[in-house]
Length: 158
Image (tube, rainbow, N blue to C red; front, top):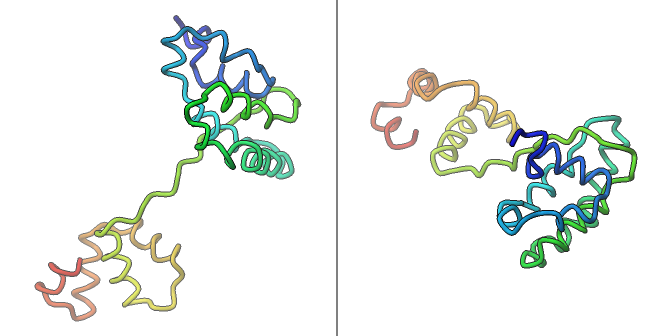
């Protein structure tokens, strides 16, 4: 089956989302229902291209109508789907894109942030993260040496 015919292909799911196809979930086989993810509809549905007013509408409508009680209804995927169909303003198909969740900061990243903050205490959090992203660990170790850190300190703190 090509992706154009597969009801579980994201483009087909989002088209049903935008046209408010409330019977879409009922058309699935039991196997397709197991594979269908209403969580993906929530994530994709909140992000749309277009003017800022439309983007704001989708985000606020998703938060207000779906996010609020989404996980309380995790045993009712059809109801979750119906909640998702209430988001679209009925203006035709829109391009929905994936907006990844923010990555959790791990222990190794915390050490690097702490190190960079020690060198540049006036930087904002996003600027610290950018420095870490743009420099690999080797470059950061070299920076530590340039600031008078010894090898033992570098090994334990970076």
